[in-house]
Amino acid sequence: MTPPMGWNSWNTFAVHINEKLVMDMADVMVSSGMKDAGYIYLVLDDAWMAMERDPQGNLVADPEKFPHGIKVVSDYVHSKGLKFGLYNCAGTKTCAGYPGTRGYEYQDARNYAAWEVDYLKFDWCNTDGINAKEAYTTMSMALRKAGRPIIFSLCEWGNNKPWLWAAPVGELWRTTGDITGIYDGIKSYGNWHANGVMTIVDLQNGLQKYAGPGHWNDPDMLEVGNGMTPAEDRTHFSMWCMLAAPLISGNDLRKMSPQTTSILTDKELIAIDQDPMGAEGIKYSDKDSLETWARPLQGGDWAVCFLNRSLNAKKLSFDWAKESIMDSVANMTLDTHSAVYGLYDMWQKKTVGKTSAPFSATLPSHDVIVLRLKKAIAK
Ligand code: GLA
Image (tube, rainbow, N blue to C red):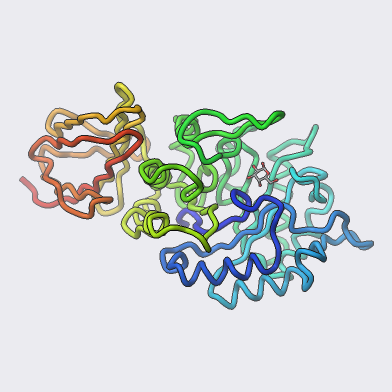
């Protein structure tokens, strides 16, 4: 019911995946503390399969990359207490040109169930002329018929507004084209482009009302540890938590720095992401590149995130008495008039004040301050 958490091969390894890599990654998901922090799904993205189906039409693993087949890999992942995911595509071929599922939905679903797959990411390349809602509904029905609970992750890039129809179809749906590890803007790759973190954040506007327990907007996998600055990584991670986004790490976990590990495994931030009420955060204000985001949490706490998008440090002063934060989707108001909240700085790990006085701070460029407002005392 909460946003799925895990690791996916694509952002770092693209088509260069194999059995040893998966096993190493499963090991390090456990030894690094990622599993304990909640990252449970290990998902193999595109290019795990052979270029052709077998004569019976079954998908088979690439014999060089996965010489012992997929079930062995799945068993290894499960032996570590993790869950196992695979990728395919609604079209005739995947985005990287491997066999797609179009016309083989029930057969592929039966194989996934037999391999004890727990998560399927389903892409949208080579789908000319087919109807997205119908194609994804067919695969969803095939998974259900296969009889194994499998998280269904729609990767349709938001082209056909899946937020309007996908809640009964799957657990999460991509809202945008692909992410890339830059803070803002668009990176061109010739015939396609990928989006920076802030570009994706901007595209979430208006989608809050479609997300909730068991059905999530997916602003794409994490690029934490993939080349941005520590402040930018903190911002990326904080915003994904504010947005109740699935947290699917996409870095090489074998080589992550202590700083990357501490960002990805921050239990207090993750608790915001995984809040059981499942209200996606809203943008409260936006002025001179300084944004304020808010998210109501179960039990009456709130998360408030100040975000500095400019290239310069910014002074911020936020007078709770003069502001009125309301989440019209969750229909909740932050009431700092009849109650006082303690301000807990989630990255600094300390209490920094109370809502009875204005909150002032200097926010470095491309950094965030995330406060958890803890209801302390009724006035
Ligand atoms: C698309 C998806 C990516 C990744 C690749 C694989 O671009 O959006 O997340 O799965 O395909 O080819």
